[in-house]
Image 1 (spheres, rainbow, N blue to C red):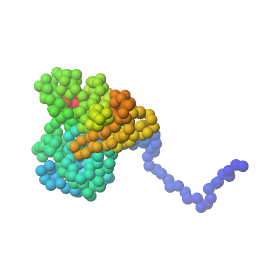
Image 2 (cartoon, one colour; image 1 turned 30 degrees about the horizontal axis):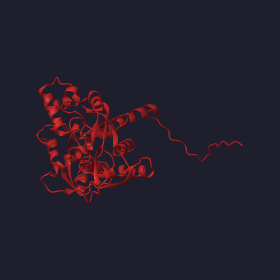
Image 3 (cartoon, helix red, strand yellow; image 1 turned 90 degrees about the vertical axis):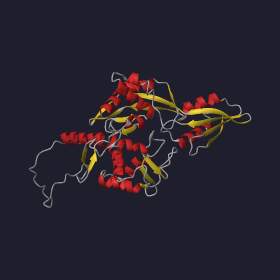
Length: 368
């Protein structure tokens, strides 16, 4: 049985005539998608190499600076700071602004936290921060060295989204924040993943390059041998870091810092003092317990999290007949006690994304 072809009736409305320009849908898709991609790259996901910040982070710091929420003043409700940023500079969702503010206050996410938070700002166990109406925040002292002399025509300003206020296009950073705190972001067709580094090492390398502009990335590695993660842990080998610093891409293997301790007569335990960067501690402990229950790792009798405000301490108690080195190697193999960090040193240079070596990062910063 075939479907009947319906013909228009006298009641069918006539389409209005169109005398405007004809637009190719193919060309319109290309143009619109390219505009969207560039907006995400330049205005959202990729940081500027000069101050190491994405627009949302820059606007948070600038708004708090303008309102006087400095490190030597009292804390202010996070909701107040979020509202200031959203109303004046960043007309997007309040949750995205608050998430960015929270991360800048986490000492397990940032080598040098830029926000001083009071209240629950999350944890290494993956706990979310408390709602913004409960937490309080102010600028941390390192932020001052990103904002110092901003009112002395040190950087260019641009109109905000409605043209009623102005905002800086970049902050006059006094240190290479991009390398110190790292960055991560996924744009359209590209991504960045820059590891954090030790502040002292980065400054030493910067001063060395100022004194001798002929230094190469390999020479600068005498000052910055490898990334330095805020959660500690140990980097295995230097080949990944060498490749990242010389080519802009590389993979660094990170292993938890562990030791074997006699907890009572004849009984030993593996003590985990530091864990790899961006590893969820609670999930890691659950993974260890699960593998032990399933007999995929033999020799574990109990796992206990004894971490506190001072630091991480996870106790993996061993059975009497277990060999600590064997169990430890199994943990490195099957759990997040050993991970890799894929370095992708991509940042905006003059508004354009560029793959950067260690030398280029520091030389561009010095010229800024």
